[in-house]
Image 1 (cartoon, rainbow, N blue to C red):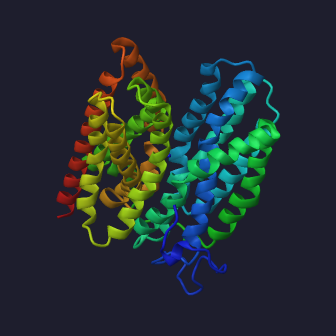
Image 2 (spheres, rainbow, N blue to C red):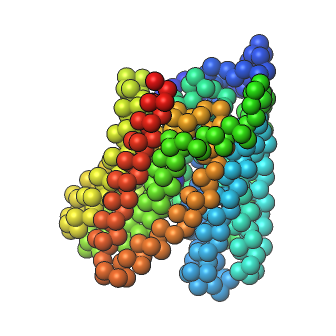
Length: 421
């Protein structure tokens, strides 16, 4: 897995999230003041607690629950799997005008998961708690928030999504030290209770208030949503984007799991080994800021075409195997900027090239294959390392997969524009 200079992203006196004069069956053109800011605050907290806190809790699970590293890590894999399995159902609910219900339920489930975590005594209890956390991820993280923005603000969703990701991109920067301090000061069980309270005190009120006034679902006069959804999957643009999403998700998960080990293999000083991964979060925000300030001056399709190229380029640089901090810095610059901007491309591509009305459901169809790719990719790179004795082969394969994903996106974009011509 940022602040915006835009006035829409700054906190303002609370105003109703829907215009009093807007027709109930027509979405507003632009988000009301404060809407995107407060939704991004909830994203910052959700990513910081549900995604990044686990790495800090892992060693405590091992020690206090007497688990191996593999057994304890399985809890997070189960969470990601549950998130993926629920993605389609969540997308259908959002397309049917239930986005507020989804995100409110996500906040409640997150509070339940962290509240229950304080009392776990065994592996099966830990797994059950993180499966609940996975359900919370499905309702609280980027995908449901992006889908709600696309549905509510069809004329301005791209800029709103870019703004939303600014704070989310800083989740690790804010919450890793915060959670580490809570654990050190109060112990991991009391820290878990604090995170549960944070979801109830901050996330829940934000979702309850700012997601009011959602436009209701209006059925198509001559067709039904399920039939139309199936029809979209009969055409290549959907499958090209599916390949792009799933392959890139596997790449980013694998790199997140192995980057520190890769840098140590290059015999870099330990300070660089820590600084390079830490810089990627800030570089993601920088990439989104660049996109925010230039997107009105760039052709959207041109930007979408070339942004994904940065990721296999970054992997190629690292796959060269050079033992230099400057090579690692170049990788971090390319990878961080790419990952930051690809988040926006992935968030908007289905709406842009397949269907805006059914974007949430179509994205949801990819939840399970994406979860499987995220679960398998780190193990696959570890297996390649075992076979070859270093990470060069694995990085070369990831680079090739990145090229394949980029080509799939290009073909999906071309076929979509050809059909619309």
